[in-house]
Amino acid sequence: MSDNNSVKKLPAPKMSKAEVKREIMEWVLVLEIAVVVAVVVNMFILVNAVIPSASMEPTIMTGDRIFGNRLAYKKNDPKRGDIIIFKYPDDESQLFIKRVIGLPGEMLEVKDGRVYIDGADMPLDEPYVKVDAVGDYGPVTIPEGCYFMMGDNRNQSADSRFWVHPFLHREKILGKAVFRYYRDFGKIE
Image 1 (tube, helix red, strand yellow):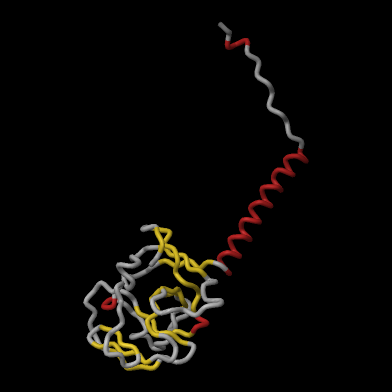
Image 2 (cartoon, rainbow, N blue to C red):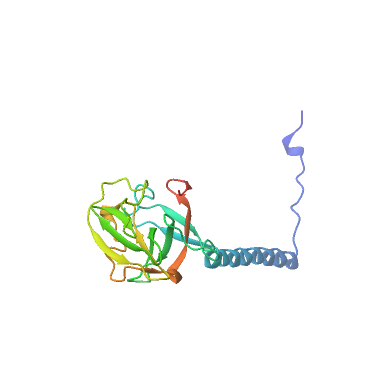
């Protein structure tokens, strides 16, 4: 049996002032690198958006947080059905998130809540619209380099149909929504 009083404790190694200073500088360098990486990712790779309203429900819920890919449209154009994050045409200090419905050069019309493109007899197939949409709009021709945006919750969406400047210019698109990281985790479809 050993006596606890007889165990000798080794003194903690003492660091010189130079070693302490070097340790602190290493941590400062790590933090600086982390900040630079975060800023670069935020400016050039990802855009972060918080969903303020029910306009995209049930696809994206109020309060969800979304990452968008800033590089998604560097080589490719947005496609109908893409969910994108963009600067709101009537107040560019606000970020909006909506679905691309009309493409450049198309003639779009909404009749009884259903979207028709270029005078088609059949409305767009929009399985993501879960409400019985109502209302009429148009017809309008979407200018080149512009898009017509609508929310999935059509009856509760302040979208292109109601904006003073109804068309979203390509250069105002910040990124394609790709991942919900808060509330309901998962890939956006």
